Image (cartoon, rainbow, N blue to C red; front, side):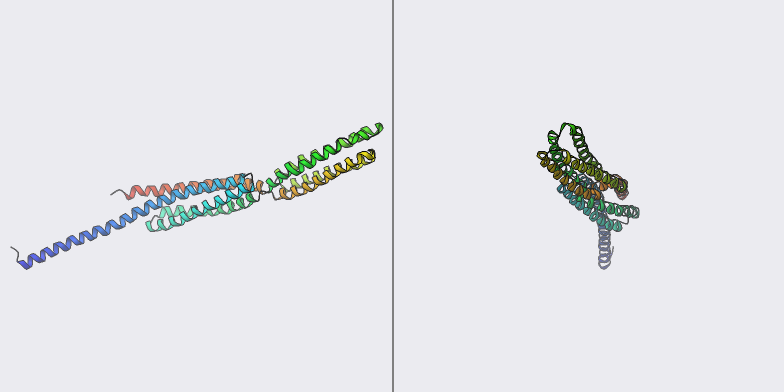
Length: 300
């Protein structure tokens, strides 16, 4: 039988051993619980980053295709907000991957960040161009004031041949036809100019419109000689409409030369599409790699 003092010592050692085991268990459980929480958060952040990236690319595309300045600006703002959330999620994820000691996932994230930086550069250019909407502005001018002026020009010429002497009628009709054809040519070439983003092509189209305007003016000058006094106001009215059409054409050319919608669309359908696909694939790879760690972490 143990002596009382020895028994007390034994009990103390047993209690101490139990306390050590409890403390060790507590100390081992806490890091594991923390690890699990961090892992779950890493999975959430990677998934959220991919969702926000998809929203950003969709909004950017809608900004390019927006029919009005308001729609393009609203979509561009939405794209910027989603992109900011992507960056915030990835910054938080980078810290977690460091604490979790996930070297493979960190390498994937670094690879994504390099491609994402290129994406951001292109997307910034696209959004800047899309909200300017210069091609859309040119189209509105062509379908509005330019068409109205061209219609007024042709309508003003309709009655002028009625007062022409029979011997000059063929000549007057030929001049009216030439002037009318020139106005149609201006409108057709104008539409091609708005759709083009090629500098040499736009210069050639501008020269063609200038030639058509000269032909229309020459026809009006010829009509002044042939028509009677009573028809001169109609010729003057046609000349005034032609002047308005020329002024609108110059404004259209200024907008069309910037070609922001065409350029932003070309960027969206070109290099950005490939970069977007790479970014999305890398985010998917990152999410899958983090999930794979989930299986390893729970096998005890």
